[in-house]
Image 1 (tube, rainbow, N blue to C red):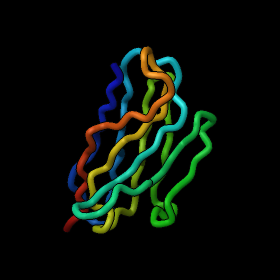
Image 2: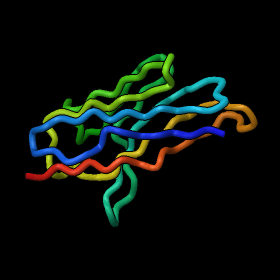
Image 3: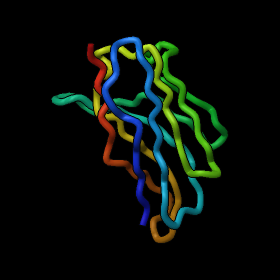
Length: 120
């Protein structure tokens, strides 16, 4: 069984910073891409950033250089450093990992999300 657990969400003032973490655990053989998505009420989930197994990264246009995705493969962990946060960044942030584990084959697994609120 594979589980993904996000942490690091919270409330921050505009212009502030947060660092999200997501740890994958279980009988994992290989982790391929790791990504962060976000969702606000009434809207579809949208991709924020993705990092490949070779640490190539890609970001949504709205990130505008404010966020940095990184990974620690030894710890099965992906991070999202968010700086210069804006009120419109308020959302539930979800971790998404493409991996291969015992009994699953290659598949995407999701965490339950962590809430980020940007408000003065």
